[in-house]
Amino acid sequence: MHGPHDVGGRDGLGPVIEVFKDPDQPPFRYAFEGRMHALTAMAIAGGAFNLDEQRHGIELMPWAHYTDSNYYEHWLYSVEKLLNDKGIITHEEIDERVRTQPAGSFTANPPKPETLSPLADKMMGVLWAGTPHNVDTDQEPRFAPGDTVRVRNINVASHNRLPGYLNRAVGVVHWHHGAHHDPAASAHRQVDEPNHLYTVRFDKADLWGSEVADGQGDFHLYADLFESYLDPADA
Amino acid sequence: MTTPEKLESGKLSWMSLDDVEARVRALESLLVERGLAESAAVDAVVNAFENDMGPMNGAKVVARAWTEPDFKEWLLRDATSAIGSMGFTGLQSEHLLAVENTDDVHNVIVCTLCSCYPWTLLGIPPAWFKYPQYRARVVKEPREVLKEFGVELGPEVRIDVWDTSAELRYLVLPQRPAGTEGWSAEQLAEIVSRDSMVGVALVSVPS
Image (tube, rainbow over all chains, first blue to last red; front, side):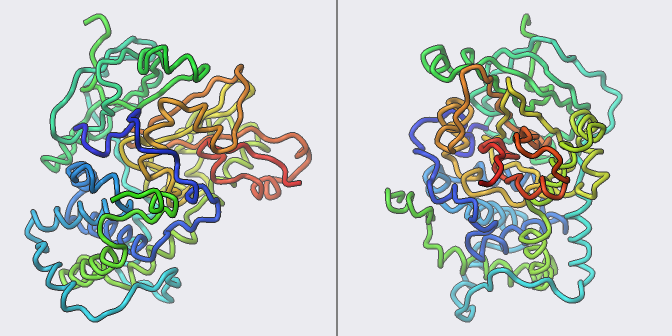
């Protein structure tokens, strides 16, 4: 879906925020950011929801909220919604806890615990092993490097990983990466389904028109796109 | 609402930041009660993100590629295996591609849809990578955005912009600066900045 998250090429969001460019900015600018990040990773590892559902939850945010908020407010919004919709923790329970919890604040930069609980140990394993997304399949890829493809005109209001600025653009397959799990199937049906994945190269003028592209010198735009987003260019 | 002051300070929030924190505290305590989290485990994960994952890992990969031609060839051909051999496989670095800067091509990475980034190699992405401004603009006016980051490229240099819209993660292999002949991999790793591995900076020798 082309929700508020799908900002590629949009005008009017303003310049890159100057203070953010300071190379000494810490990984987490506020203590709640690190907590939110770790809690999300833990809830995913615990099977409460998956990464694609979490991304989709962010895409469903109201536009103004998304644009004007702290990055980890996006995560909070999505995690709250998923836990509520799945009956794990309701919004009302969080409201109630906010009202009744003792005053306090998170401690930034927590030290490494001296001993790891089984859950902490499991999380360290997740951090340093990862969760690969490739899926075995017998399906033959439809495209090969060098093929010219046209991005399908996809405007469904459900989860996918197609940036809106690429709708209907014509590009050339640069790499084929085998099949990865399909984000839509994962977000909406919680299943792993194979979808061949390609890196596709686009021409700047085809994307933005010559008035804009000419002023930017030579550049190529590459995006990682699933086979289901692509048609042969001559189709 | 966004105001120029809020934008300049980077303190964007829809709720107040205190209210966000209170809500995350409430969420944490409820997740603990449901058996989905433990506060000490959260400490451990935050600590790992703040200390063990970060650009010092990516810098080791770059420095090794600069000093070992075989490793560089491996990194460019199969970055996932190459970084795996150094122990840097992990969350959000499961499928890695390395793209090389040359005299003719400069690479820059973006995730227009969210904030995809190789955590084990570069750590938590910087705020500019995660907020909408950079993501909106760098796919459309990369030369202008790079200039704002202080990277002025000649007209002969093509820019390759990589929108990491799936589960592949990218590492820019920057150009090794002149004046570092004979340096060890350890010395070289010291000068490889995070921003150079995303493509919004060049590596230079500190004066």
